[in-house]
Length: 480
Image 1 (cartoon, rainbow, N blue to C red):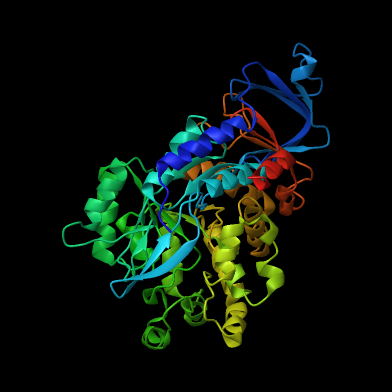
Image 2: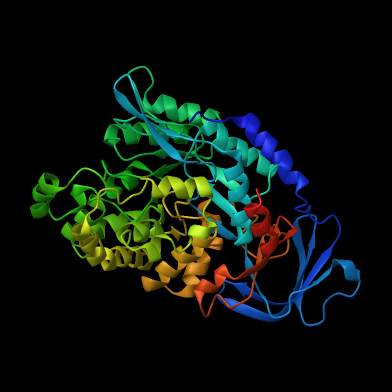
């Protein structure tokens, strides 16, 4: 399948504007009767109100709401809970299905681009209260186009900070997703090209060696762009020392982080593919000096981590349709078909592999909790667009898995709001409910402090001051 370029995104942008999604308030609007939830200060305020004008919160208070605002601009949210708009810091908004072809005797993977999927993702993310995402990789033309078109109001969806093509020495070309360094086009050159194309992040991937990683980080920093690492060839400890800004996936599966007496056996016995997701955890000592040093280094250097627990939970329980199909009705049809026909993280696993994976799951949760308790900045990300991960709903499941890890609901709510805003360097304008801040607000039907799963019960969302109803967004998304 060939990639559809920016002209198609422009077309879907026009369709989005015609869908009647609403525009940012040009006059003051009042939202009253709500309980304000403030994760930053761990407070709730009942019978509160806020006034929104020109996309920003201009006033807030409690008790009797201002009377000067006309009835048609007064919105009664009595009994609802208002939370800052949510962040998904690992959402591949522009990725479509994967296909494999053989060219000149060599397999090539192609990642399709479908503007209808982009439109669907945008609406569904908003329907679940997600007003900001970090897209950590895709075709650079497509990711940067989405970010620009969303800012300009040409497409409906959350604000996006984006990476483009992932830099990796993959032995198999991945068209539309990966840039492979060559003798004439080094890691540093690719990183500089990505920065010049307008990305917010350069993403560095699993097969890069230490020299590659150092070059990529240095080139990105020289261009004023931050870095994301999904790493295996270099340990998280070393990556932090080299200056990586963010790490993704709670899978630091590098042998240097294992006890010295287990490394050789691990390297000799580990199988090619995703089996290392559980084989590494079988070998690691989470209380050993290697992991302690890794966590201390991440905390000291303030390297942000999004664990994407839900992505691995779906793989570890990939033999249970009740788990993998829990949100199937919310998946875009062509993506669901792609996952069911072979693109999945647990490809090739046997019954014993699933047994072993489930046995180490408590260690995955423990590592996540250990990083949080040590002060490593964690955010909530899903890896949306990968197998059985859907826009919006998977974020709530990710938050629940953090609760399963023993992290408090207040801390998890911060990870999805103010902490994420801080990590993405947008905390001077969003991530909080405060006068002067952007009116990114999610109205929930239940209290997320009592049960973090309540983030999935969205009634409406304000995105830069535009009032959007969750049910309407879902209906529009499903009709496309």
